[in-house]
Length: 156
Image (cartoon, rainbow, N blue to C red):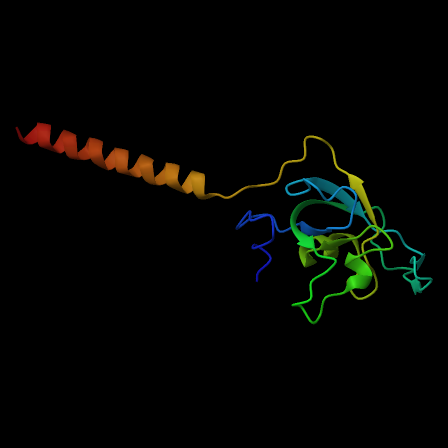
């Protein structure tokens, strides 16, 4: 499965600043297509299980990224050996960010996303460019048709 084939079924998206939302999150219902501004917080993170994770110096200061929810981070996914219930079944809020989005806010080797913030209502992300391509093809066909008509009229 590629980054473009999430559970929301958006297909190819030009912008790959996307995320998978945990299905145990209270805001999960209807989250497909929702945009969030995500930032990273430096410091020591203590999860609900009591584990301490040291992430000092991992964040890019003042950086945030606007992501679009395109997939699910499932709590119970028995078919996947690598499923990580610790994050998706959550003792705390969690999103799986794409590498593209994560790299804009933190050093991938040192950090985990921590703080999803609601994005501005005007959040827009590029959709498929298929419409523009079809419009361009239609325009070319129309020009060819006009040229053909002009050529026929000129011969008559």
